Length: 430
Image 1: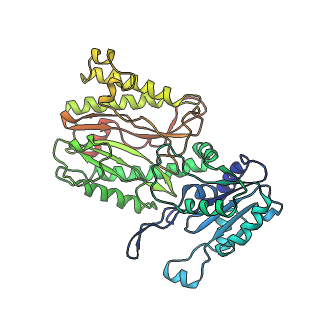
Image 2: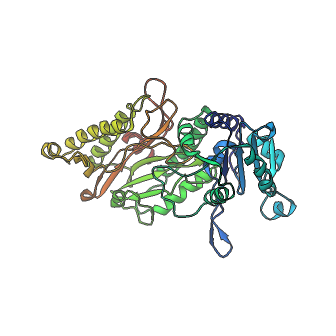
Image 3: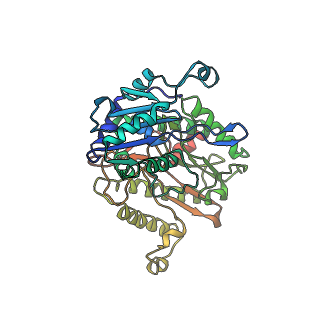
């Protein structure tokens, strides 16, 4: 891992919080992700399953965490099972976690090699009544691949059919959505790295640069600051490409007079940042571009104030819709008749702003969070309004990452990233 070691007090706390939500005489199991093959002997870079990382800090493949708070044997109330490391593995792949290093990383005192899993699990299953399995129930999830977690769950339910089965995901959705101070610090580091990347490209962009060259500049800056790279597939969308919401080809040349929409964020220690800025290829916004840009910025600033404890997701988005409608009327993109005759299911503003304004962010870019529950302090959200005008050849989106405060306006993790028109123009022309 490139990131600096995280104090294991975070993971000790997250396990305690999870255990406090479990039913009596229950056990929970969490698996690492697979290393996914590409072809021949090639694989994709390993990405740890965020749930086992959240609960242990272990960031390697073939790892299993077991939590059994009521276990008669105290040493078996928390167990890590790891792939056994040896000299051969150290030479070919690099050293894996030793039992001692696993304790330093996680705070889990009992560590076994994976070869002992079935024997020890049999003992544990005779002592518990309920087993928590870990399913992916995120509202955006669309998974076709059978994961390591899926295979393990099949095996476990077949091997121990008499046990009651419960789900870990509702607990994790609740816990992971509210961030610990250490997590917020890690997200701040991710945002700070993103800032460095953005400032780098402000001095790099000129007419005729290619979108992929901008992507490369971001990656250079991210890697040199201890990030693995992008927290998600970056969008570098010049001109009309900005009107394709998930444009990721990044293979066009940026023409003089166009805008570039940059939806880019660095990860740090598996935590995400998520930034969008829209900048002029030539270093100066036209009058019309500036009007639209400032309208989006006003919506973002006013929407941010609505992210307060007790607010509800649907109501929040309805209020943002009113803000956007007002701005679109002012820009001449909507008229009053269109607003008066709009469908409640697809309001008039959706013609130019068709996506949501905010999502939870944390270990996942679209992080866990139960949308039917009220917003709480220390949840972290993006705020990302946009106006997309294909007939005018450009789109504008602006996005920051905000921490909900116990009272007052949220804290902006991207407060130091340039966003005002004058600031961006000054830097690009300095």
